[in-house]
Image (tube, rainbow, N blue to C red):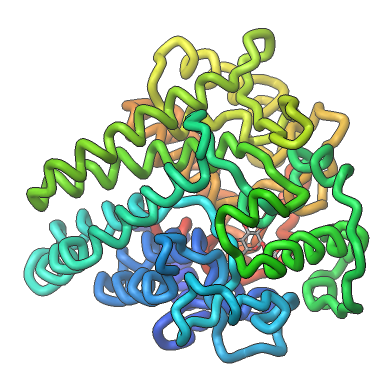
Length: 439
Ligand code: 9YW
């Protein structure tokens, strides 16, 4: 490691240490003082580079919050109730029969990247040997059924018509909150009475236009209220909620992670479950491919209530690169993502994929999921590239990510043209991405 890399390594470790609340890592020190589900998986990947038992603990904490249905909730609340809105109380999950009593969580989920983190933990355990290896193996054996239940719940409850696509009920479930992907479904949400609220996120960023506006937040809260009104019962939520969308990127992650979990299952002698997971992977992989617009080559989401495709030029359009499969489709997608509408756009400070194409009319340079570059996503695309033997794309993503992260702010997202760090600094999954890229 050269001096720059060493400094990046030490500062990234320090960010994770400073965000460590004991048995969970806060997603960010001020803006997000709780545990987020998919953040926790990336954090575990980073932690596994420096402390395998602590990485295991992160996922253990998340699993303790798993609902009896199998759902893993998107936020596990720490004791710091004042730091974030909407806090635990606003979710009203205490009446949800599937939520274990002692758990303080939200009532929705996020993309299932966790099995990928498990794989990393086992690989690091194998590299280190000794106690780390034993702990990693034991953890996988002890928790395999819980992860399986999570994948099963998604594959069945969230895809009742067996489309090979996962239905989400809130933009927050996608993890890409205000992405242009959700503009048309949100346009049709007409919020009823929503009790007054005071947001916290806007006081943690320098420029409030980077964040969703209050009108958007009213809709976000309305959907939460709708789900709470039926006690977060899976069937009733589907009949009640005003936002029902098949999320192609979420589905791609389920496909990829199910293959990884199947591999882990085989390694611990769970052949039957592995076969079940392979089927889930194959089903959702073909679901993702079925969304591709033949003209643009981009994957699309589907609005269930409006019965229409949602075609936007966002990073989710490259879902097939995550789920893998069809060589021709993937080659075309790789050409597009490296072309002038994406990584090849001449004005980019770092030639990394922005969350929305700079040439899309919806593109905003500084606004959250509408343009900025999110470092954890580049790690996910890098992982998928390595899996598919795409060393060149992997190296490009790694080299440029390390350059971007060399500013040592560990920002939540970056302005694509200037490289300015935006959102929260010292964001846990950004630090974790740095550690994993460093290797
Ligand atoms: C919010 C924690 C979370 C991520 C999401 C991201 C943002 C939280 O932060 O959502 O309050 O809007 O969109 O993907 O998990 O980092």
